[in-house]
Image 1 (cartoon, rainbow, N blue to C red):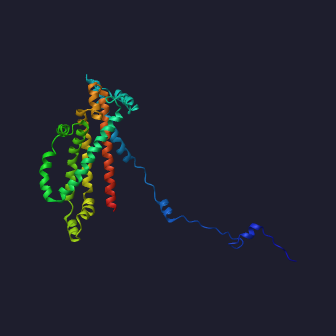
Image 2: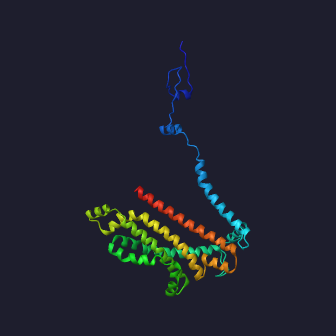
Image 3: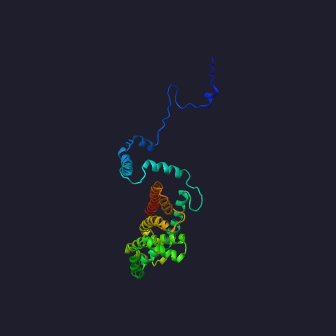
Length: 305
């Protein structure tokens, strides 16, 4: 007698992979990188580093506000308290770009106009000062020629150049830009020239042996070596420019953060003057921080290359 064995369609499509009675299990192994990651213990959160990064600045700001509050309470002067100044700052920055005429504009327009003057004067100083620094550092004859002039003119007060600008350019804006230019150019010239002079002589000897052109020497040898010095000069120059523009605008008038301070003083609005002081400091801090990040980025790329 013949017995028939029937299989379901699903069983007929799947080929047996193990003898009857045995179970075939497929092992799934994780990649070795994941195994190492699983075995590596996670480091604990650095609470001490967080406190060292956050607590000291907060204590410093708290100390400043505390001294300010004590001075406003203990003296008979008209210095407003931190609370009053904060309320006035909320009012001012609620509409920073209002325009009621040339002598009544929001703080946003004054900051923008000051930054515009700084950008023009600083840009012109960079366009002239950095190439001049390369030439003075590269050629000893030019170094001996211009070093006495730089030593003579660099210590001159920034505001001493303002009357010369008014006399020559016959306008407040060009005079302020001229003052920024003449005061910002010295750090860039000096730092760039020092950077060129500190390039190792072995580099120049190799360039002479390879008979490199002057353009190749500047772009392939001098510029990468001088870049940190040059960026330091740029950073110092932009700080000087931001300091100078406030003083120049106090004297020349018009729209600008310096003129805004002087105008508020004429109106005896001390709260707005204190707000302007904080605004000047914050803008200067942002400019310096941006240049530090740019300098670190360029330095990283140079080391990487």
